[in-house]
Length: 391
Image (cartoon, rainbow, N blue to C red):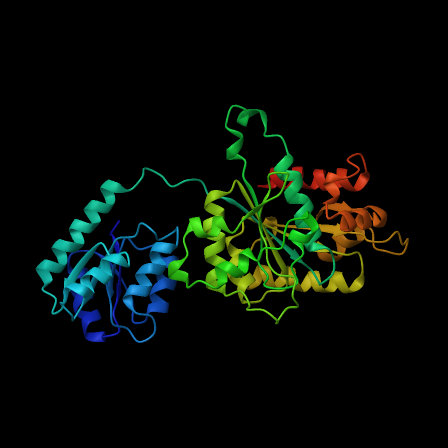
């Protein structure tokens, strides 16, 4: 199979020249004239090498290189940077931004080919035999606001963090069982409060930094540890709109870095299919939709399932529905009625427990850490077991 090379330059003539030279040697060429387009194609096309110009109108080559290096999926991608400038300072800046080699315009075809071939050979020698397994990323999404999505994610994450590893893993170090819960909303966040953790806007700290300056170590430094062993990327409790919103690029970078370190990464995604969720949901191995047994929640869940399937191309077998009952009303829908209405199986039902919920909120301790023999705690744990089997 031909090696795939992404060529990035805002000058169409340079694109044609470089593309022609490489095409004649049998390489598959992908072209981009803007830095943003280059980043998108680097993720989507999985090239073997990038030939990258520095001077571009939107995002310059230095920043493109930094973002590629900051992304675990493209961190090892060979980068050949070229420019019309020949000053040593420009080359030093290029290498500091992550370039592997440098080529000065005007481009000589033989020199271009020799440097491309050398980089590809060097990359092949240094590449590991296989990449680590894809992390278990689970998104928690509410069919509508106020159904208890964060509470579900918090209790499920704590139950999983305290869960004994299966027999096949008992000889492995316990450190291998790393569970992370990340709040992906800037504002109206309550996970840290429910866990009794100190207020620490870890998400906000990440959002303040430019993409190119964020690495895995910085994101991990923003995590707080709960007594169960759960690691939490918390956010702020201010109203939505009162703080800086999460950008899709930051959200995707957080998921990539935390997913690479975690055995299980749970994402509290709130409600709806905004830009962030549209970017993040396709990266989830599984999505859990929380709903209530009422007409409004069912109608919204039906539309949500349809959009996720047809717009985001998420198959229904990668989506689980869980019903959260908050009162003991005899008029609410049954499990069978909901499954018939949505044409989708319910994987669990969390029964109403208003007294336990009140104690949990008052003591800032998740329900799965209280009254361990209660029905609601058993249901949370059963849901986690079902989820692990699904993954």
